[in-house]
Length: 204
Image 1 (tube, rainbow, N blue to C red):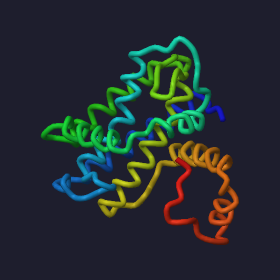
Image 2: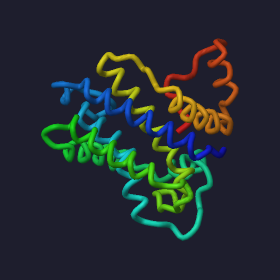
Image 3: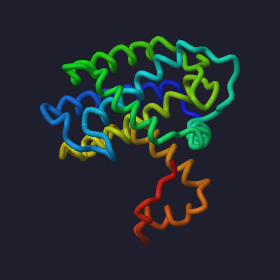
């Protein structure tokens, strides 16, 4: 799967804006339980890393492409995921947002979106899964922003109003991952109203 750079940039910007506006609705609910062992602050902190890793990885240029698409990134990253470490990074990122998390999120998003706007998509960067083109990595960040802003919106009782551009890319990545899953038939049945998916089903 390959996305056009203009499309990926639009999707990333839309997802970033939705995350910022949703985080602004948190008000005084930062300690409310959110996702797993995370409270809202930790969930927002984790989601902010979808922005911060773009900045961090661009500062570490790769020598060659080792991961060729967003779906390859997720397949490669599966074996590297340490749940406890991810949870702690989320808490640390939430703490790093400081006394005004809403303002911090807005500042991070503005800075990183501006950085992405200055790029061509051909930049090589070093990710946890290996060297990638920015044009292939950025849709994974849109994916993370869309999925986790849905988590945040659900906790806050807000509509899961994913921007169309971000939804389009996220659903394409999900479909690509699901197509390679042995349970692809169950996904097809569920999406066409023919039966539910198992409660623990996930393609990532």
